[in-house]
Length: 483
Image (tube, rainbow, N blue to C red; front, side):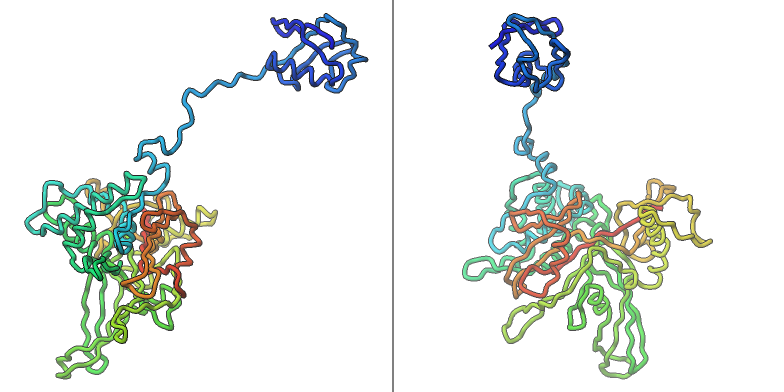
């Protein structure tokens, strides 16, 4: 052992022992402990130059008590963080919801998965939540019955709980009022509540909200639910035998995908559902006759709901039987060819602008506009916004407060945002689950109180063909542009 002193900057370290049986690198490590200068930065002056890591001490010639000089910059001292690590569970509950990226699940109160999945899908519509928040707390109007008012308030409160809670929510108040308003959901079998049809729950809940959110006591748009979900039809009714022809209009909240041996894709089922035969009295013939009804969409909504007609009444078993046939559905749905001529005409310009905008993002050259179109310098962008639901206005959202402002237009193109699935052989048994696309683009499977992330490719596998979960209701959100 040899003891030396080492001068570094203004410091002098005395009696630093060198184990000459170890390479100089070990000595440098000792100095690192003393000075904080890493070995690779140390420059130690010895006879003949700088001390190398693998030098031979016998040739370096270090003597007892010798004074060595070292140069080098020490590592910056790592300061302890002012605040310790913050875990998600330490955040306030509302901030935990944001961090998780999805809302809470719902406890199954006993065969209530049909209700839970319906609520989760509709809860994903921000415009509906906004309308509910503006629903008056003071009480119902004279035109609205008490149970409809109570169900609207319960829906608003349940949506609020889901947005604020990380832990699963028990929808007790909502379930109680739903059964009071619609007694069929309170049916018992052997003392237990029976499973119900999710489509019936969806339809009844939307009907109630359509009544309450357009009541005079509500400051919201009188046609809120119709604007968000309402689909307008114009139909031609023709009797080939008598030559009679008439037309009619109607408004519904969902399209029907009829399933047969010829239907393999959603679009085929939708087309099939636009044609039907009906028997009614013919004034010209003085008796009943067969009429062909052909329908076209004349007004599009902000959110397009599609029901797969998978259940039918089976007399032999006296229950609803299920059609298990696989029917593929797309992540992007274009309903342009299902629309009437007037609506198609209104959609043409917004669709071309949308294609040009998407082409620009892909680096493609925009198609030249016709002489009747607006100047190409008029900037068009994708936008959000709700639509009205009838006639020509179905493609435009006006800005009443600012007439000169740009307007939002529908394009007839929709993106999938929610799927309600059924697993089992009967509508009144089995299990319902909601699959909802979050604002961050990720999909969450809401299996009652257990939300689970899913991949987008897993959603398209919910098309049926076996006993796995299969799409029963799909909800699509309109792709829009402003101009």
